Length: 449
Image (cartoon, rainbow, N blue to C red; front, top):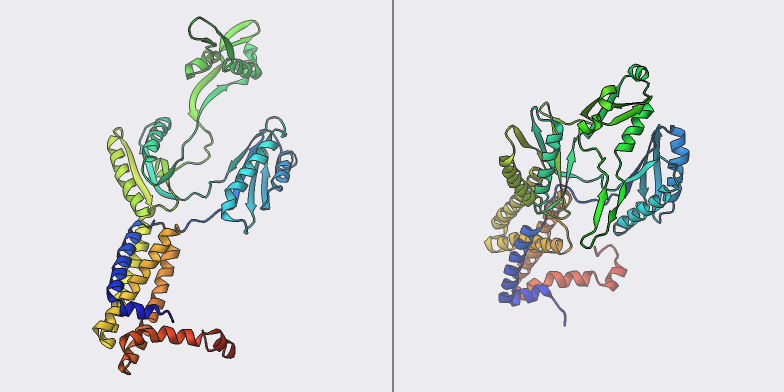
């Protein structure tokens, strides 16, 4: 007995209608639940390694720092190459895994790289800082927000940015919040060598005094019948004035640091980089979306949260949206829906005019029902809407329409020849199976396609 799904579908009309409605409802549910993103997620098989050795030459960085690290990285299972750039006091390495590395093994390889670099770090020359590994530099910022306040010190702006960061992290779908453009604070001790020579104080005396004072040293504890009491030395700096009051002993005299130098608070100079928004110094907060999340829902949630945060900011401070990836996602989804509606409308119109209203409805219904099944498969396999999947669906619309018209046209022709509707529905599939049977295909390989 030959199994023909088309014949069963025509014969069992009630069951067929039930499954059609079920597929339509499931497809709508999958369409709503599918994540939205501008671009698909790519597995980046590259990490960067940075090392710093103040005072070293470029040759020393290459021979004593970069080369030992490169040899250890070559032990990775999926190692492909490493590109190293060295300059005085600095080495930057880009480690790339093989293109054939399975995506599931990339994080394990990154972990092994960290372990090997950590083991080798103990053997590097004294004074080397690092190696510092970064395997998340490829994060894409979903939304950028500019925090600025005219005339407010940058350190106050940075503290407010940390508070906003904690609030934004509670938004569902946010993976991380990166703070960009923050200038690290520094304490500057400026002195004149001529003045130091007159007072009989050397720069080494100042450095040594600062290092002795600003230390955290265990001083022991006292065991009592009750709790254990820890003894701590009150010497660590907690203000600029405390630094200025540091005693300097030289030539039998005790001076304050402020007597021989100017102590002031400032920022990293020169700065690594600066960010300005509309001409004003700004700190940027970059939100990174979780993989597979609905970008439209995240964009709406971030919009509501940022508006609520803006209402609580101090007077004169503003939080402005600079970019929002949800706008691009909306454009891509709207384009797909427009083309889908146009394709369905054209198919329905042409089918109704050329084949009649009953046949036209069947052809038009084939497109959304097939897409409903596709949406279900995408939901179960963890895929989401992005530029690639939406483009593939738009291209597939033409194939869906063509197949539906051919199938229904064969059925109509056979019914006009006198064949009943059940046999006519089964004819196309049965004929295709006969044409593509192994024996027929071996005799006529070009006939079955």
